[in-house]
Image (cartoon, rainbow, N blue to C red; front, side, top):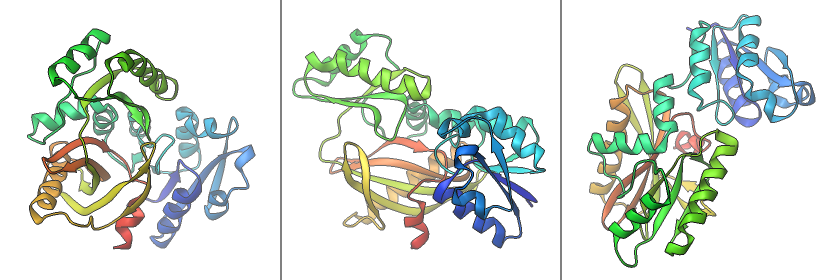
Length: 302
C-alpha cells in the first residue's frame, strides 16, 4: 500500500489523482515551479515542493522531480498524462530511487513509445497492422514502399516518437514525399529528441476506435470497452463516446481481444489504450498509449 504519493503533473489530472488518493487515505505531494505555485493542484495536495525553473519545462526535469519525491518522504510517483508520463527513463529513475512508479514498466513504455517497434510487436503476435515499413534510412526506402503499393495508393508518413497528431503527414503525390518525411522528422525531433520516421499505407474510409485496458503487471489483463474517436480535426480528437455505434459483434470482439492480447504479451501494468482503425476490410492496430489517457473519463462514466 502506498503511504505518500507525489503527483508529477498539474491541472485536471493531478487534482483527480490527489482527490482519489485522499479518499484512500494516501497523503499527496504536489510539485510546481514558482510561477505555478498558486495553481489548484498545489492547493489540493497535502504538501508541495517548489521546482527549479519556470513554465512547463520545470515539470520535465527528471532529477528534480525524483529528488522532490525523496525529499518529501514519498514512496510512490504518479505521472498522470503528458509531461513525463510516457518517458521510460523517468519510470526507470523512479525505480532506481526506490520509488513505486504508478504506471507501466520502463520496458513497456520504451516499446509503445516507439511506434515502429510497437507495430512490429503487434505483427509478431498476430495483431493486424496496415502494410508498412520499419524505420526508413532515406527517401529511396520511402519511394520503394510507394512503388510496392501500386498506382493510386497513398501513404501516411509517421514519426516513430510522434504523438498528439504531430509528426504525421498523408502523402498522395510522390513529389511531396521527401518534404513530408523531412517535416515529420523535424516535428518529432524537437519535442521528443527522435527523428526516426516510418511509413504505413493509408487506410481509406476508416473509423478510429480505441480500447482501454488495465493490467496487474503479472499478465492478467482486462478490457474496459472501446471508445469511438473518429471525430477529429487535423488528427486531433474532438469528441469521444462509448460504446462505438454500429460495430458488429464480430468486429467488437476482435478489437477487444486484440487489445487484450497486446497488453498480455508485455504483462501490462496499470491503465493503457490500444488504438485501431476499422473499415469494411477489418481492423488494424496503429499505436498504443502506455499511460492513463485524457479520455479515460469517458470510460469511467459508463
